[in-house]
Structure formats: structure tokens, C-alpha cells
Length: 69
Image 1 (cartoon, one colour):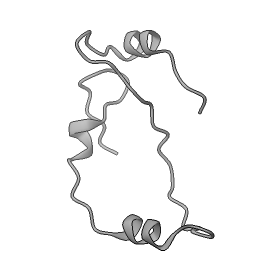
Image 2 (cartoon, rainbow, N blue to C red):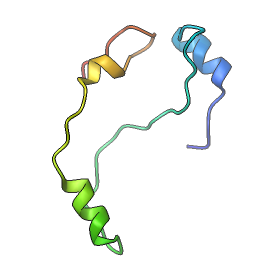
Image 3 (cartoon, helix red, strand yellow):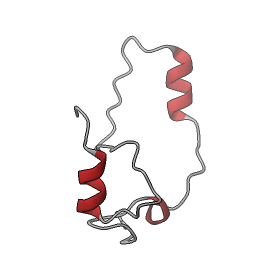
């Protein structure tokens, strides 16, 4: 991805004016190819994580429409 236009993204997705999108993330399958990666990177990527519920941080189509996966 080469970037995005903040104002256009805010308008298209109905993001409130007091929120500024900083990044857009492409979501897809995770590949398991660690050829050439440092061992610390492999360990970090495989470590257990505690994450907020996806619906609390990701929205679909418009701000506030929780993404359910």
C-alpha cells in the first residue's frame, strides 16, 4: 500500500472530526516464512498476546459499525 488521503478516508468512513486516522492496515493471512529473520523477531511473533476485542477497535463501512470478523 502506498498511503491514503486522511480527509477522504475520514469522509468515506464517517470518522468523527476529533479522530485522525494515522494508518490503514491491510488484513490477510499471516505467512510463516521467517527465512533470514532474527530469532528475537520469530520469538516475539509467536509469543502469546492479549488484545482488545476486534469489534472495539475495528469498524466496517462507517465509524461505529463494529467489525465482527
